[in-house]
Amino acid sequence: MTFQDRTVAIIGGGSGFGLRVAHGVIAGGGTVVIGGRSQQRLAGAVAELGPKARAHAVDLEDRPSIVAFFAAVGSLDHLFVPAATYKVGPITALSDEDAESPFRTKFWGQYHAVKAAIPRISQDGSIVLMAGAAGARPLKGAAAYAACNSAIEGLGRALALELAPVRVNTVSPGTIDGHLWRSRPAEVYEAAFAHYSTLTALGRPGTEDEVAETVLFLMRCGYITGSSLYPDGGYALR
Image (cartoon, rainbow, N blue to C red; front, side):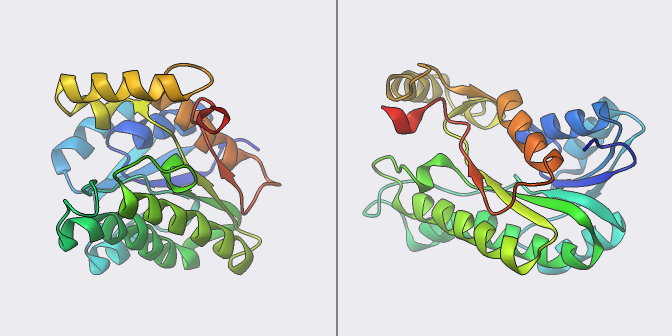
């Protein structure tokens, strides 16, 4: 299956994983509609992607905004929602509001995006949910975040049954050297990359392009549904 004459909606397509997936879709002959909160970032991404991309603002914590986004998208074939803003930390250190933040944007944001997309998505299309390897293999000090990722994987399996023949899968990356980590202080991401490298079979963090290739594979492969793939460098093997 190729992306020729196919439309892919990506909420969080202005940077990071989402932007890399958008490039892959366009390279495969498709068109993309990207969404996010920053109009400036969206405009920059559309300029980078070219005429086969368009953008509309959307806030995953604002349900009317989500509905309006999909009304602007119209019909679509694939959906990917990597956008999320949240705090991570130990249960004794996080406020209740911060502990709930992964669920507000990463879980419920994706849930409501899928719900709004259902009437518009083609029956031979797909949805790729964004979780994280911490759901299956948590690191110490991020219990609520790990639980959120596990919940997203469970949501993906359940929706694969409920929405069939639309395919629903989940991508659960490990630590990735990309936009999110590089926006943090150098001493933070360098320590995280060094530690994660000791935990993986491949001995390094991943790249945004490697995660994007996993997402594109799940969109293209017409006989995979209800699965979770882990681009994590073999973290489970150590």
